[in-house]
Image (cartoon, rainbow, N blue to C red; front, side):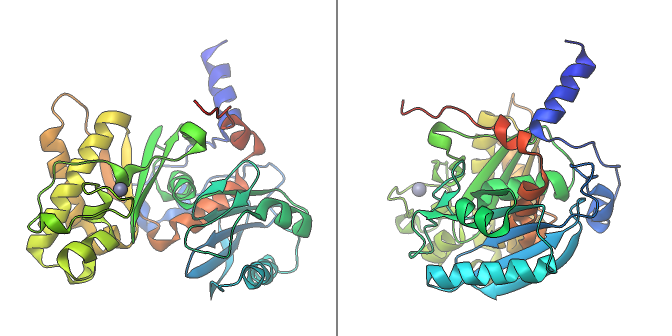
Length: 339
Ligand SMILES: [Zn+2]
């Protein structure tokens, strides 16, 4: 196969869209990086993305280029029926009475992304919910759902800046999670899982080592050191109230985690999002990057940067799920055996 044919095939299979024009100040002009329509006749169609969180629901409509047309937000109801009602009402509102051409959703795990059956951990009444089936029969359009961290990685890839061939997205919020993309395709591990980046052991520095305890039961996880819950447990206060000495420890421990991830995945870019990353800002990124580089001796250091999508990474990822071609999702289907 000729190289050009191969590139075309990869682009077709992964739903990869042509590189957007480069800009030296991308964070100030996201419009330049919005991809052209994935579907050639989708210019007038409306796509809908859903960020289904434990505390809030975000729903937005976009055109075929991913430009937001309308967005709405509501608190997440506790009951499942009320939650589904709210989502349908919000979809109707943002779609302006039109039938969406495609929909995507980001939600907490665990879930079966192929069948679209979800059981988000932080929504106790949502168990084995056949979200794909329910939405496709209600709206008569394709519906894709994925774990919020995978969706967020897609959001970064399509709408956040450079289209890195190997992009690792990390979220530091109440917990810690990750999504890894190779040529725009979601990496899926054993049983379809996403990278559990928070549950790795690191060579940490901590003035209160006896307070380190991960929600998973282990005593030495990165998540227990740098997530919002972990920080609160160790330092007795939320991340936004940490003093500089505590932030130095968080940056050091995050840097050790980045070093491990860089050594294993060799990503081109690591993007950090979530409330703790946003709160720590560029000084957290700089401190962690310096530690990572100091300890990566023979391995090329990835670019590490803050997300440019703020708190919209999962929402933009949900829109990317709605917009990308069905062939892209098909390319990620693998036989997930039990071995
Ligand atoms: Zn853990």
